Image (cartoon, rainbow, N blue to C red; front, side):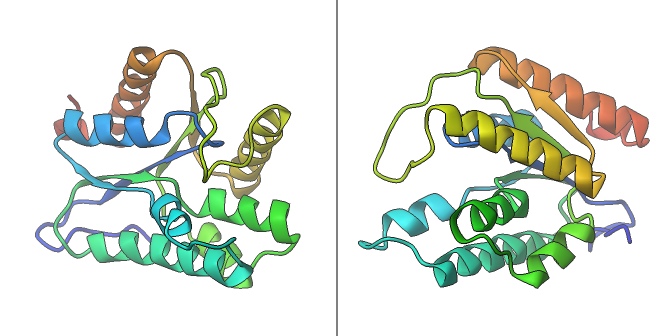
Length: 191
């Protein structure tokens, strides 16, 4: 079912930026939010995990997933027309699969509700930079990229792969979003 904004009878368009670690998701989310003068939801997991002062647990990852879901739900009643989400449940689902080999059923159900209209899947064609929170550099980035792509296809989600330098990624993302907005009859949101 299509969600409508509280202040109008127009649909809320949700765009999630996804992909492996260190592929420019946060930068791209910030750039797109600014470019479209739209609402952006920052990644929750990174700061949460960094603040634990211990290794994360299954319960921590599930908490992260619930916060991600609730952040999007909270926006639905704010009259927002276009929403950019830095990382979403597809990443969390794959995180559960890779680390714990099991996924909470409610995440599967949530993903099948099609809460995201368009995914921007960031490629691994930019260098990985290690930091205390990142744990999947090297070949694992390619494995994860394939897992995200496969999951989006399994779900029947609409997605576009975003490649190139930071400037190219923004241009490619804007082109993909504008084409999508044109297709769904939301030309007034095109920039």
